Amino acid sequence: MSSRWSTLLMDSADLTHLPQVPIGQVSTHAESIFGQRLGPMALYRRWETQQWEAEAVPLAPDREDFDALPPLIRTKIRELLNTFVVGEYTGLDLLGPILGGCPDEQSLIYLGTQVADESRHTVLLAKIAVDLLGMDGDLRSMLPLIWAEMTEAHRELSVVEADLVRDLAEKPSDYGRWIRAVTHFHLITEGVLALNAQRNLIKGLRHRQVLPGLQAGFIAMARDESRHVSYGMHALRQGLHEGHHDAVMDVLEHCAPLAVHIEQRGTKETAHARRTARELTKELERRMVQLDLPRTSIDHILTVAARPFTPPGAEPADA
Image 1 (tube, helix red, strand yellow):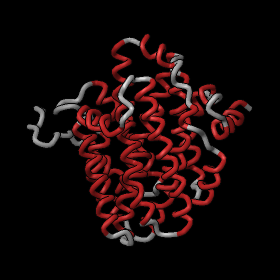
Image 2 (image 1 turned 90 degrees about the horizontal axis):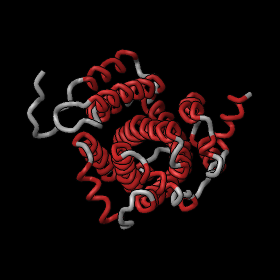
Image 3 (image 1 turned 60 degrees about the horizontal axis):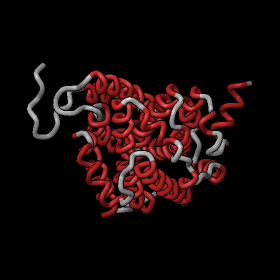
């Protein structure tokens, strides 16, 4: 009974009740949605029932909790939130060509909802930066500072994504280019990186029983993300069925190592970066299995992703 009730709660709870959703259901919710293999219109109908307001997320009471945390924990939360500030803004900026190049009317209707979600997430992250982190609310001045603090792999991954979307914008009717952009945007950025980071942040906050406003906002974002990734998986399975296996594999070969080593700074990984790499590798494998990729293709990408990452311009680390 509790499992069924909490699953329904995750789907329908408002901002006030989201921090009360059992953490096990928060952690498994996206996977349960992916397993249903919903199409664009089913995802659209879910979107209609799962609305929330970014400005209504109660963050002011969280500031006292945040200031009382140990400095190291505050730093880790700040670093993670910074990546989301950049990620949600660039997601909003880059989604337009994916919307414009989508192959059918149902996808157009669904992707319109994702544009609205990305706007809401951008507003929420700006609000978090101001109310919780004490930053200037001007995105134009905030973003370059955050960009400079990101890891080399994260910056390179963002540049690759922008290049793929720019290529699509030049030829919006090129289905192969659209599949490449969706592979990066929906599979790598959202399906591997964002979902993993959201779950880890929520778990950490729930464990310490702090920052309920931030928990509410990130659970709401994770619920939105389950729809976004579900659509991406649907679109990529369709693309693979229509013969675009090489396009998907090309993006995965290039981007999987960057995603897996996203926390690495310099040429040597810390214990935290290695632990994150293991988590992200498992996340990546789950997504590829859900795409119905051949096992040989999955193993190839996992082998490529496991190779040591050397930042551009750096000397390889000693073995």
